[in-house]
Amino acid sequence: MSTGTFTIGADEWGSSYGTGSQCSQINGLNGNSLAWQTTWSWANGDSNVKSYTHVNSSTTSCEQIGAINSIPTTWSWSYTGSAIRANVAYDTFVGASCSGTPSYEVMVWLGEFGNVFPLSNNGYPPTPTASPIVGNTQFNLIVGTNEATTVYTFVAVANATDYSGDLLDFYKYLETNENFPTTNYVQSIQAGSEVWTGSDAELLTTGFTISQT
Image (cartoon, rainbow, N blue to C red; front, side, top):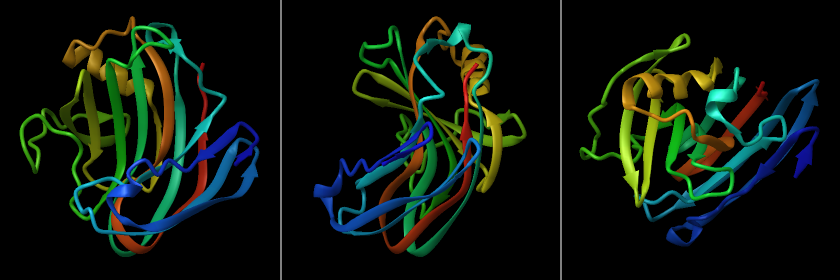
């Protein structure tokens, strides 16, 4: 479903690991700010993600990181439900070209519920590589590997339910501290919720914006 520059994707890629259902809807568009929600109940397969219902926007496009000036974004959200195990996260992929296999996945978790963890190279619960302040928010940085893709996950130390920041700052941090090559391209940017298990859950977004210059 789409409105304005935004499209919602119901990516239930792990649904075979459990039982349940999920639905999403657009609640409105105020200028360039999207209101939307997703509701779900998933059981079984506790260690497996069931879905990543997400939003993307045509205001972002594949571009070399070094040529990007900024990727400003805001996200106001809340989560309710029973025994929720989920996150609220930006998910971005970076590669040597716009169409090639991604070399990196860079995630920004604004919220975490139920002791779920990102991919980690040093066990679970993971030990952060660093705890940087990016913009005005402090994160723990977790580094993991998914086959040939290095995964950097910034997990907010406290749930950031009214977030405002610049995604480019995360790439700049990695360039300075993790030898992250900004000659690579940001292939895609999505924002949504990875869902493990829970019932009668609702992620309600009252305002979401993103752009790229």
